[in-house]
Amino acid sequence: MKTWQKVDYSLRLKKDCISKKGSFIRKELTILKKASYAVLALLMFISISGCRQDEQKTIVLEQVKPKVAENNPNVKHIRIAVGGMITPKEGVAYYKQFLEYVQEKLGVKVDYVDKQAYGEVNEMLRTKQLDAAFVCSGPYVDGHEQFNLELLAAPQAYGETVYYSYIIVPKDSPFHSFSGLRGREFAFTDPLSNSGKLVPTYMLAKMNETPESFFSSFIFTKSHDKAIKAVAQGIVDAAAVDSLIWEYLNKINPEFTSKTRIIEKSPPYAIPPVVVHRDLDPELKKQLQQIFLNAHTDPKGRELLNKMMIDKFVLINDSAYDSVRGMKSWLEGHHAEKKD
Image (cartoon, rainbow, N blue to C red):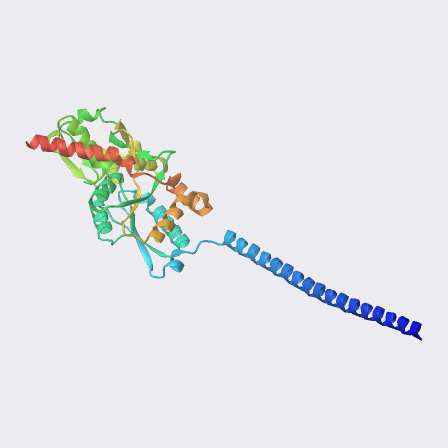
């Protein structure tokens, strides 16, 4: 009886032990199961998060930068001038098409403004009636000094960012040097033009002469192509013109350039740039600049640049125009000395 009780007691102990172990195991399994669920949930979260991050990265990489109109709804349109001095009439259509290309890329309406005189273009930039313009080196230097006109980009043509002043005469002219033109009729282009006015005036001053003292008479044609035509037709004996425009016409329409001859070529000067007024919206300026700088990498842009005889647009430093400043400064000092 006692033995049975011991056995029974032992069995109960074993049963209790087994029961407790089973309960403990079930608890451990439950804990493990919960832990497994937690780990699985964590892995799923990481996986989903990873996918989302990958998707976001892809969007960032592929996203096209918003156009100005999306970033700044207040920008309704911009006005860009192409002076009649910058391109001959044969090239005007291509500049208009290029500004249409800029409009398409920018997402903002671009108004083409055609102005003949550089003085008028500079005044419109000063008063913010224009946002940007293609100008000559001389007007840029004046505008930068007077109202902080800013450079946007500059064209590169024939592999260079420089140009020259050509002194031209009729093909059958007996003259072979600028100094031989004393007493003759001469054509300048614009009073603010570097190649068409400043350079020849500087050349005369170095000879201790002025346009009034050296030439019998002179005129302003208001454009380089008109000056070339005036020489070709014998209206004047000589003229100072932009090398880029003479070369452009000589290639696409040599009707008048073929009747002229270059007798002198000036030293190189920084090429006529594209400028903006100083208060132009920074984001607008940045995007406008990028469109110009990247145009040659785009098939349509490259086609238009080829028609304009421009390799591409590049950044240019203000210091590139120091030689123009030097001429202006020297002339001012020279004239002051003569007055004294």
